Length: 242
Ligand code: MN
Image (cartoon, rainbow, N blue to C red; front, side):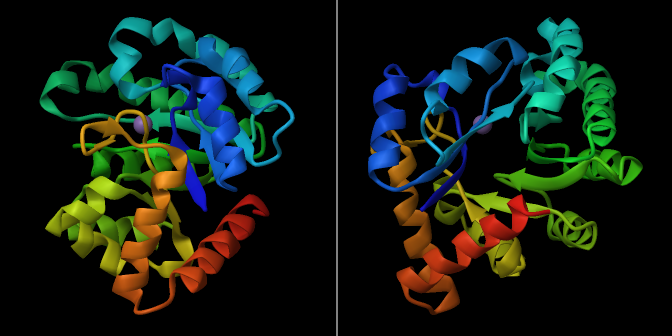
């Protein structure tokens, strides 16, 4: 199983969740929301090959923590994945959208300078703006659009641009989300939880709960869960080899 976007460091008991994820055989991309969390969150992955830590700077925090970008830039050479990064154009964050865009451009430039990285990208309410930035920074690496919620047109553009997608429970619960998943190239999809932010039955989801997303994909693709699981693993290997 693959959880390509999980905030391990934000669970009340991160060490236990990390250990359980390893026990369940889940590969976890442990994303962060500030560069200040990089070293602490990396400790959760110590000794576990199946947990990779991503260096992040969440767009929702840019309004108050724009200065963090310097620390972010200095840490990029150490990270193989970047995330959570991106843009948020929803009402609560729109005031900082110009600042977010400047910072996202800095992040993409830093990624380009380092030779390109895999990026787990937030694009809520800002899919076109994210795609514009990616287009302007073609050497930044491979973009994985997490919880993509743009229009079908934006999805089409994202696919044309070579983007990947990580899909989770909230997408399979919504009709719109399912319509998007249906149109995503199967060889460019990964599964995710976005835990602990995403809840299921009033409880935060855990990395091993991605099995429910695998089951849904198996249904959409008319394949066995094992077959979907293999496909996702192949996708991940291909992505990391880029
Ligand atoms: Mn997230």
